[in-house]
Amino acid sequence: MSGEFLATMARSSRARLAQALAQTSRAELERAARACPPPPPLKLSGFDLIAELKLRSPAQGQLRGPGEDVAARVRAYAQAGAAAVSVLTEPDRFDGSLEHLASAAAELRPLAVPAMRKDFLVDPYQVLEARAAGAGGVLVILRMLERAEIDALIACAQEHGLFVLLEAFGAADIELLHELTARPTSVPLLAGVNCRDLNSLQVVPGRLIELAPLLPRHVPRVAESGVATAADARAVAAAGYQLALVGSALMSGADPRALGAALLDAGRGVRGSP
Image 1 (cartoon, rainbow, N blue to C red):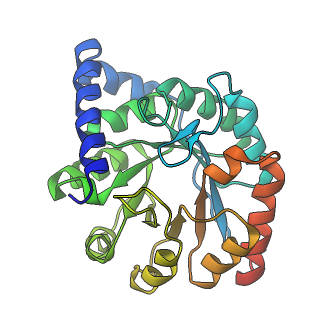
Image 2: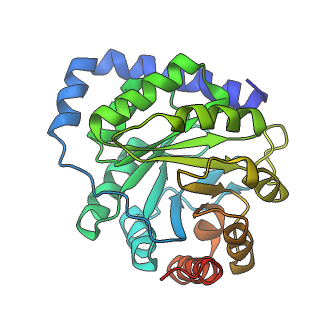
């Protein structure tokens, strides 16, 4: 594991897992997950946007207050053309919650856009939490986990029909990405590069371009962090990314619908997508 930040977040996640297990058994949560209506499928069209809901950023501080209208924001993301909406559920550093995820998923379901749980997942129980809240996808951070833990998270997502964004920070993670995406799965696997430095937590956009040629070509590639403008979207699309995950710029901007649409237009212009 690289970076004290990920180590800290993993410990916090395991503590939250223990608290959740004390309240709801795995069997009970499994039943709730299976009873939840199927999520909308992830539909991609050349260059796409995963728009993110997060109230706080450890690097930038408060982005929106606790009174944020989650439903209205994710609706604006869907209207901008987002293929999926990432919802932070980590409470301590990002002010997130599973309630935000459930609210977002309920709002997005009629709009045929899946919600993705973004958190520091360490156990399949947390994948079940996501599905029970209505999510259609989850983030898995490769640098933070042992291989057996990664396999267990993917297997649970596959069983319950959730797509998985596999997040890499460097070349070693990308080697593992090749192994993980080489085998067939019944759910979409996405290969993401997060260009945030794990020590300073600052964005290093050049890493997206540097690491792009190393990514597997047979799965959708996602540029995470570092995309805030139309020029950024054009740059990552030109480097071969098929999606951009954008959070802080959309959360801090005055018009997330307009910005989301502009990012899509810029990226699709490079790729010649419809």
